[in-house]
Amino acid sequence: MTMGLSNTQKQRYSRHLLLDGFGQAAQERLLQSKVLIVGTGGLGSPTSLYLAAAGVGCIGLIDGDVVSLSNLQRQVIHTTPDVGRAKVDSAEAKLTAINPDISIVKHDVFLSEDNAMELIRPYDFVIDGTDNFSAKYLINDACVLLGKPFCSGGINRYSGQVMTHKPGTACYRCFFPEPPAPSEVETCATVGVLSSIAGMLGTVQATEAIKCLAGVGTPLFNALLTFDALTMNWQRFDFQKNEECALCGQHPSITRLEEYAFQPCSKKK
Image (tube, rainbow, N blue to C red; front, side, top):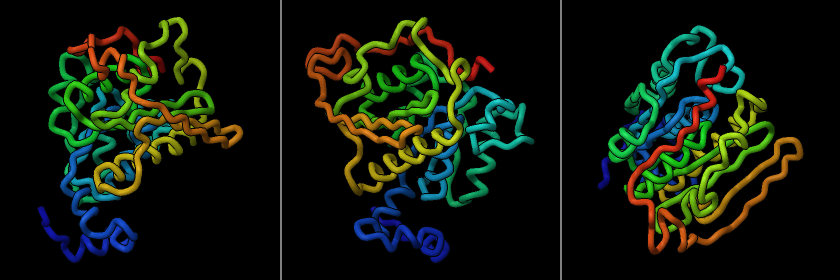
């Protein structure tokens, strides 16, 4: 469906319209798309800012947390006056200021096995910007069961990793079949995280979403991209979908959501 662009939109998105292989058709696809961002923290901040600027028509935000002072070191969508404010309210204000063209849908809750399917179902693409394994497996499992593409990212200390899934490609469980034991889990609240790597990885996630929605380029399907900020070493590991995967394999044993009992990093200030 072609909806056309207004003169104001043509000016706003002019640098997209000039891109070889992008142009007006891809921009219109972005404007008609709905992206759900789970977590408006370190990764969700840059991802949402760039998706709003790029013209994704509807951005959903899931986060039941409030802004704390310790968030401001890396969660760049929030500012000092926002401390104590609901993160989805703080994020909405910044995104609509960047681009009043788009709509923001706020979900001031934490994702759970009880609400994940309902919340994810209306969207075309999902961004996993969470900081805990419980949410990551929940997003992965719900998206696979619903047939939704998504991009999962994670950061810790000086490093990060990202992967993208669409139906028929490797899912998060193909790479990591089960989460580590709780005693082995490191969080940003216990070991720290370099502020700028949230921006580095979040912009990769935003780019992956734009490519998938606009229909340009080759997303990180069947691949895991990692980086080490101390050496600026980026590595790509290519994988095949695991046909024995308990979720997306030929004979799946996981057919419904079941949440792991991990507490999010944001709960540990």
